[in-house]
Length: 407
Ligand code: GLA
Image (spheres, protein in one colour):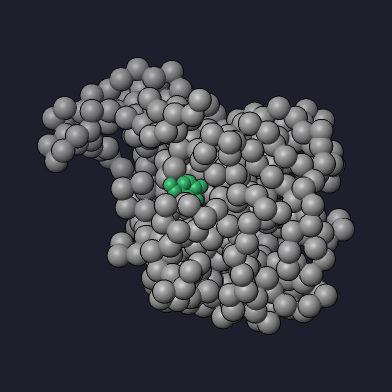
């Protein structure tokens, strides 16, 4: 496996018009604008036969509380914007601009024939820790705010929603906030019309995790969560169980250690049941903590082994996913490794046994330190170029919180 390192380049001789998934790329909608839907939830809607991507609308002026964007797609690669599905309301106690409207998820209730949106509703200091609820008769919205409540009297920060494909039952998943008493993640069943929470099915105790999602394979439930490092990536972990009420396994990492889950944070997983196979995608965020509105998306196929009880994310620069058959394949390119690159200024080559050819390029500061890859050959057509990099300055923080220490 090739790992992310300070700087490797891969040049891929594939046409840019083709509808591939490029993790971490700049994804544009069909109008040519950057897709703005962070902390995503994706719902496949039977009625429209389309996938609907809901996410936080972030701008430089309004990085939080900008409302919920919606996009739709037939192939998970071409996305049409539907604007804001939930718009913020000036002066509103729970959905005002500048507050927190995070990690929205939408599910359909056959009983009420409505779409229900749930999310983390809060003020800017995370002092409320509530779950927001809004409703619409159309999946694209607009959604009408219903309420923001404390689930069964509890705190709720990062929100996830899981629907069991075998019995159609939905569950809320929520981390418990950043306080010293808030180290648990809750898994709670919802009532059948998705208007309220019902009862706690499991409590992941004291692991101090967040950004939860559950993925379901034929025999297993897999709960993926991240550590609490704010808008910085960390080593996402998974737990496995035969049943939602447990017993759940010990957590284990889902990507090579210290690769920070390929610079991403968990939040959602998508099941694609094709005619030939079922594929699961990890839907993560590649946050940019300095300009969070400019964050990217890391979507990767997930590989599980039911007998070994393992789950891992597979990194691919570019892959082709067929949502009808469920099949996907990586698109291969030519690799130009750091070892052959020319360094200038303060850039230097450093031994790293995890890198291709055992070398990374580092010390790339300011405008004078550069790297040159020579003799890169193009195909004469538009191509994808992928650079593998990891900010090695980040490697020191581990999975620990940045500012707080908890006793
Ligand atoms: C974590 C959470 C996000 C957001 C940021 C804020 O990354 O998962 O949803 O609340 O912290 O720092």
